[in-house]
Length: 314
Image 1 (cartoon, rainbow, N blue to C red):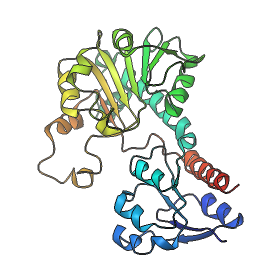
Image 2 (cartoon, rainbow, N blue to C red):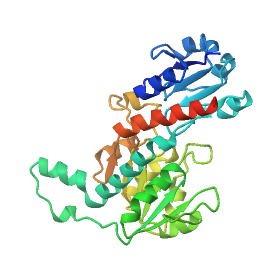
Image 3 (cartoon, rainbow, N blue to C red):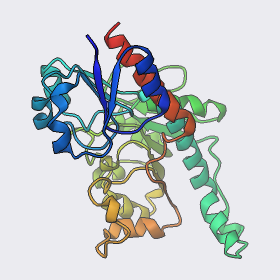
């Protein structure tokens, strides 16, 4: 029987070509609405997505012949995973595909924050030659705390091996430390960390996790980097901590406002006050959800998905 796959987002050609070579029947629809896709999804055995829309209960009830959902990305939060599993649908993601990109981005953000690279660049281009106000910090001798020690957290810890830093992490799973990082309690991490890097999925447990109480539990002022999910941080609480210098700098690749108001954020007269502060803050480094968005990861993500789809039918 031919396995029919519907691709609703564009991806690296490796994905389409290798599935075709393996005997799968590919179909593409990059423009139809969710409702229009639902009207024909019963004809397909698999669907390949990125983040176009949510795969919810309504969608899954119409997908009566669906055998797998493959998301070309690290997380599955856009899918009602519990309900899909009750229907025996295989869930496929590819965190292995962009973990190196995320790790390199995280390191780059920290080094930029520590050395005022983006701020200094803007000043020089504006004709200012400010040395003392751009005196930096060295990463050596610091303690880097990682929350979430899965694919991304482990890849980031590995990148830190060339620095004289103490790398610690906290995770809900026990006994997963390795040669690159030591597992500690959350309270110990909050006591020791000079830098906090988040590598978490977005779940009910991590939603708004980094709030005022969480931040104030840190013993020292610290820098924070978030390449995971924007809603893991309460932006208003982060901004208040930046104003009091409890948080020394923030590198945010993801924002609390993503997918809710992000498309019109810069045109909206009601830009959230906390976000306006970040736009103007010299110690905030903002990027548009690109930590895992490299040319190399684009192909690697597609290859991981191909391999995992093949494995379902092996």
